[in-house]
Length: 96
Picture 1 (cartoon, helix red, strand yellow):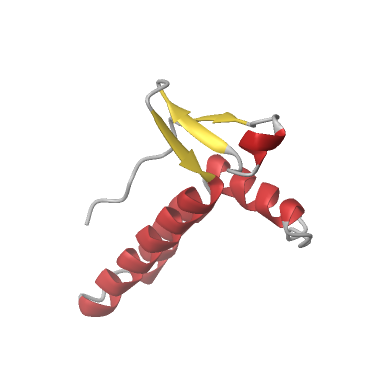
Picture 2: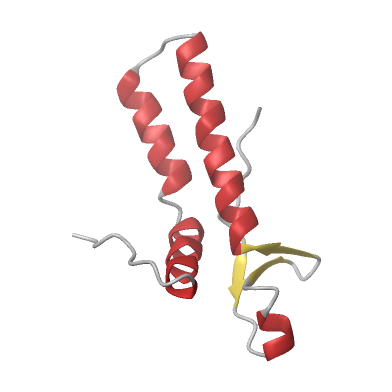
């Protein structure tokens, strides 16, 4: 399964109370909206798929870790995670 390239997504925070119930969304050229939750789930599923592939066909562990970082450390994934942490009252991890 090919990882989803979400790096080109634009982040838009919804301010209205009615829209806020739906959470933050992301737009791709104004056509598709994706919630922070869905963005994070997609990143986790991409990471799980990569790990499953590594287990089935062992390869260079350093390369697998590098690919995991590419998936989980994308700016849009980190920002979505931080927004959800604030929304649910969780503390985001301290960045060095």
